[in-house]
Length: 208
Image 1: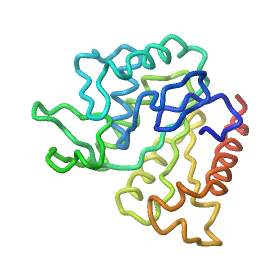
Image 2: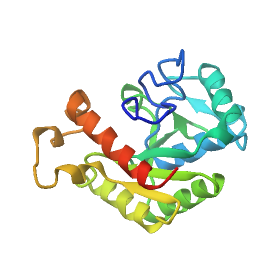
Image 3: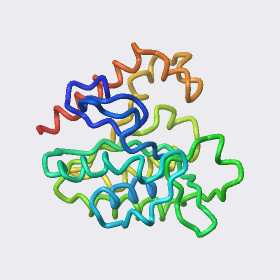
């Protein structure tokens, strides 16, 4: 969302629009239960002692969690990409946040089913009842069964305040090489700008 015309707080791994924004605002999340727990943490519904981080400890993200919490009333909406059903747990059964690919090998991996995914989506929405939420499908959602299931679950919970954005529809009539895997399109700035413009258009139509 660095390329968005809106003032977005980037919570993934690039420098966002916040002045002096650290490289990772709150880190990365893939599954909906990870996103759910992170919003609980931001809003104070989850104790920081319950946060289990891989690449980033709570101390690494505390300043940014506090910043978002203090400014939450001024945030009009949330943009969330749910890209996986898989999540990883530590030995006590707690979800591991900000887990890197290299550290997944020796961790317990579990996968959400359709019912669990739908429940987490609905519970996340309840956490922020006065905010618009824009759920963005992963760019390759139509090539991977798990992401097709995520899309199905997202469309179950769509309503006047919940929007589902699917960037790959921009290229349905013109398949390109960057659709071949998860990494190619990230390196194509032209495509990234096009996707950001498309997401902006959905936000604009929702009449902030």
